[in-house]
Image (cartoon, rainbow, N blue to C red; front, side, top):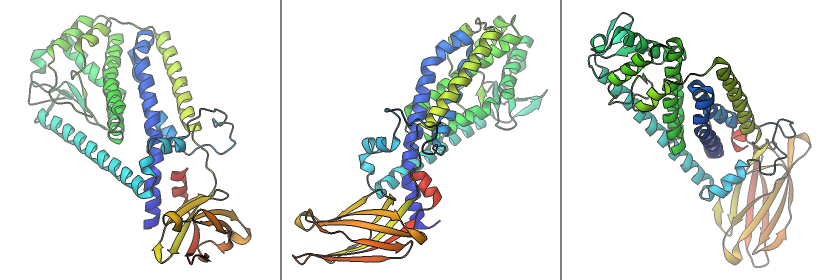
Length: 416
């Protein structure tokens, strides 16, 4: 990829990052406010499913915007989310391309650091298990303080403590294994991995960290409820198994742990909640409709693409001072630059208009010391330079060479 394309692409990531952060924060805040009412009305499983809104709405916000004039787009809303305007209001420090690139690089450094921390924690947890001995379809850890847990992403295994057979009764062991196998059947380790990825990508956003922790808590409650529906007369044994399990000293980003830092009292109290099938299905339908609406709103509120984006590469010679700035603009949208200070300052406003045979007409308004001095017009072919020379009565001189090129498609998507 050419160096100039990289310079365009990296700063273009900043509006996308801001858009994704705003949408993720709104989704997490909404689920945080609704999770307890959802749990009471429709059961823990529905409250856990609501967390899907966070990644789905974030992905929707990063999809290409709807075409201008589309009936799907939210163009008529006066308070619609204009993320380009928000960028200008919230990040004035990012007014230059270099500053925006530094912000994106700082974000990337944070992502790598957060990912490294997650990897270290996962490896520390795996080391704490010691050597695993497989027996009867499960794996026994060396330590009596490890597990029960479901470990692994694509082919997870149930890991139990070394004294699993002695510490728990037969019924308790069956309930624990049912709990961990319920995690496996629902692919909860994949959900945990997705939460870890979002947490790394949003390492600067406290709502991402809070949301991931609450999602894991609701995951355990949903799994408890599923086991209790299949074993309605085993609540006492299930609670006894919880009380016999020690808190895990190591938090595993990807594992589903039977007992980690989740409030034990809340889990035991939730065992008495029974939600009828009809209410659970109603809750799932409501959640699906809410996520579809939220995802559509996050996507449709984006600004529509505004046409082709062009790069104007300039070579300036202002009274002997040379520079080579770049302007990015679309046809019929003025782009301006300044050079010099005070009474010797030059200003120019350039407007591009497509012409026949793939050429571009450049109309310019040039000022010196705040007064118009020239209105040149140039008809140029894309990629070919054109030169304008202007002299003033006070012997000031400006020469600018302009080369217009169309930016690559991926850079235009980032700018949109």
